[in-house]
Length: 98
Image (tube, rainbow, N blue to C red; front, side, top):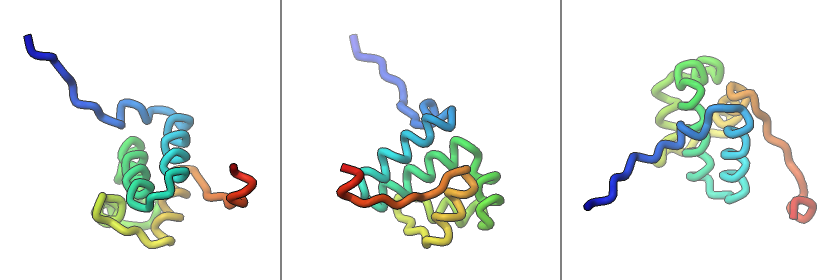
């Protein structure tokens, strides 16, 4: 008898602000720019790309492109998306964070 599986979708786990923040924190801790971009895209999709794009001041298509696995968002796009998601970036010493 074959094993039945279901498709895993991160959207099922990004329903609350706390879940979204924890997901993005993990991506930022990893430090891989592509992973961060994809994680931002996942969170934006969980909140509605059209709404996030409008609040970030870019088109929906540009947001999809910037936050795709091949995208490389500009700092202004990154900051606009974070603001639209109700988030902000803070800086701490790497030594302090450890």
